[in-house]
View (spheres, rainbow, N blue to C red):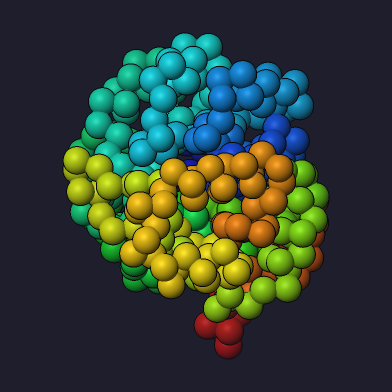
Length: 328
């Protein structure tokens, strides 16, 4: 059985993390991943306090296993953060899209662990200096907001950059099966963080069947950068955290506004309203259906437990085969 030091840090059975994919995570998905031996994550971005409270309470009803609650620095909400560290108290608080700064100490002071996602080696070094417990190195293949360096190049560089701190590194971006997990381990990572594969899971009810159909019929080249969205939901921050743009499956809406990206800033309020209304009405598949290039590897919708079992079995078989071939 594949078990890495990350499993001991997070108190999980398998080194598989479900990405927060806010606001599309549900308690059912998070608990299913955790109950299957991985670690589920609740995304707090674009969620109300009442909704987050409900998701946390329901998750705790459905699992006694560890789970994470995620923040994006660009949409940070102080009241929600206070609730998470003082009341919700998940084992892990995670963050992305910015420098977490003093948040790391506040999480540690609450007796919790801090996990941070980065897109560059420089960001990894910054996170290590802040004392984060786990780092996610997210390659440009990923869905949602992501950087410009591929996982194959980024992951081993981040592993090397924080080796002296002995911080476990998780690989993200372009991973959807056991081959991806095996490859991540070969690069020096201690686990994987997956979003798109879990969007295509039976428990991802907020995604909806139309979006899931898009994922399982997509090729990798259908997951494109949404260049105009930074003008609609600005991600720039005082720390110049780096150039990032979201990745999603191609839609008419995306193609139209990618062409008219110069106009997006002046139309930002209207576009923001259109996208947020679409989320509430379950029409994200018509607008910005976030997805990584790993969509090209996904051809079915499965329960989260089956996804994790398949990944672990395939990864173990690949590693056994590699060892056998190396010895022959």
